Length: 241
Image (cartoon, rainbow, N blue to C red; front, side):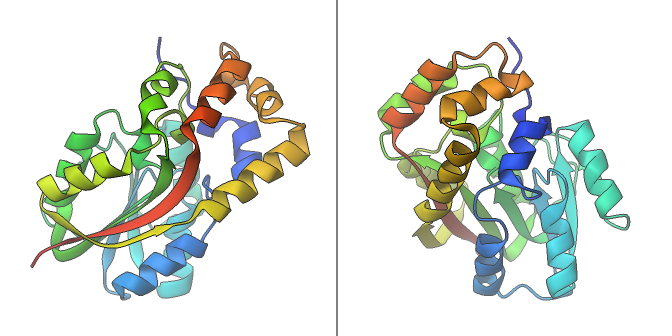
């Protein structure tokens, strides 16, 4: 069964806002300042969604960013919001840009959505310039032994495929990255859950409210999420010069 794109649903967009992720731009700002990106740097937003980060980088730092998303609908929204930015429709494991094209790649709550994590990291390494940065903010599981159960559900959300942080670090190191920054950002995830429960009464009701989850057993899915003990993190990896 093909996964359904929850990020195209009004219910998910209302919950997550224009950024389609926990924490909004606070984590983005932290990453930009850590990496010391400048106006002349070219950035790729991997899984750009509606293009909110592209606009944020331009409006606040004069950084020109390009976007990639597998969803045609979301990519079209990103183009409407960022008329001068290049937005391409593609998957992360086949990035349609030349080697060493970008000073940095942002994957904000999107790396967990990639069909082939190892290939995607290899592709990101290829398109980053020497001395460049890979910024990852995403969901992780404190209890990764339950990840296989989560992955059995047919719904397209980062909550379905949280990271095993140890495995992610191994993959990044194996592909040539050095991890220079790591920080737990669990509070942003907790704030999102509280917001959803306040609005819908429960997480189960939230899943049931979405058309993209029409075939989802919300109670069992939420039970699997609880067992995994999810959190949120920011990790910044560096490609050597």
